[in-house]
Length: 209
Image (cartoon, rainbow, N blue to C red; front, side, top):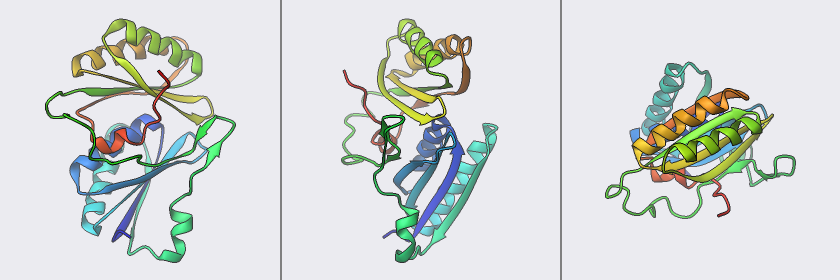
């Protein structure tokens, strides 16, 4: 078990992914899981040496506050084995939203090939309302050369679609998609992550081709 477990709870999957990417790039920590909290938010859990986990959590909290959001954080030092069944959730499938509600890193976090050789970005468009995100994604893929790589639901009508392409294309696509989506629904977040850390990519649920 790791020396410490950091916990951060926020509203929205988009801000969560941006924060996790920043934490993974800031300190030597391992992403353990993301658990949906059934209140339009996520509980991010990271592990590692105590100092590294504390740095990552502090950095993540500052980022969320800079984005105008709110979060609740804690760092469990020397987590007790007896408490781990409540700290780390088992796999759970939610029939209502037809997907898992606990995201685990899948396969190796070291297998993303040639990231340095072929820079790319991912974009996240998150709305409350499915029609809005559908309109946004259709506009996004027409605006720039990007592909849809994942779609995640939080419940309560919250849905996030993830795009991939080069930085300029993803930026243009997210801007166009956000503008289109906000005409039909509520935009929760719209973000571009340049050179995403391999760790966060392993959390996403790929869409069927």
